[in-house]
Amino acid sequence: MKEPVQLCYTISEAAKLMNVEPHVLRYWEDELNLNIARNSMGHRIYTDDDLKIFKSIQNLKASHISLKDIKEQLPPSASAPSAAVYHAGSGSVKTSNPNGNADKMTQFKSILTNIIKDAMSENSKEMSDDISSRVSDNVRKEIDFLVRQRDEEEEARFKQLDETIRTFQKARQEAASAKVSEKKEKKRNLFSKRRQKAK
Image (tube, rainbow, N blue to C red; front, side, top):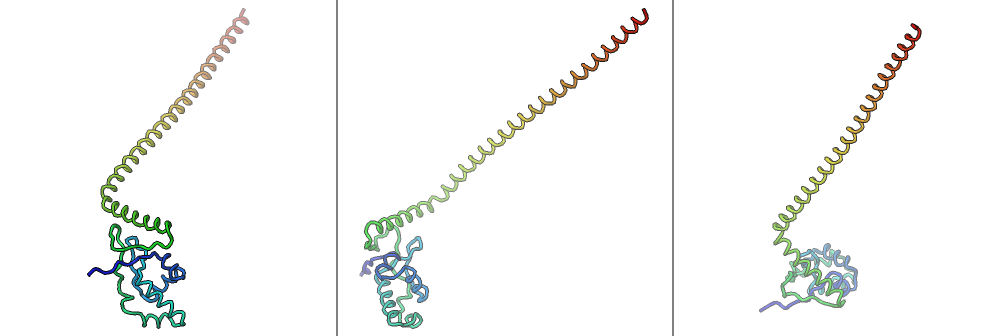
């Protein structure tokens, strides 16, 4: 005979039903070594049985009984792993809906995340190869662009340096030729003065 299908609650739903803060449920779980089922994303999933255990803990706490004493009074099944573990796509667990559309959306996101996670893990090799190939191509293109850009900058710098050197050389040549012309002119003037003196 099949086990009865149990309702499942998120920690926030369970905390609201128990009228406590979510951290209280986590604290009790840790201190009392309770085995709460988790979904494939690692989030806690509380069943009706879990809520019954929490209700009895809550009642005992209200009677001023310490957690150490409560731990001894808990049935062994409380620390046994819960049978209700949620897997995306399985219809064995129903979820409660006390908060309407917001909780439906949270559950839908959780299911969708699990589906995407499964698809990604199945296709991770192909995706990593594709990503690696694309990254390699992009890196290669970027390196080629940077090398071309550097070469163009160096070429422009060399052209400017060459132009500066040529301008400097031309100026030196012009200065040298002006000196030569000046010397020649001086010699002519000197020679013509001597001639005039000689007459």
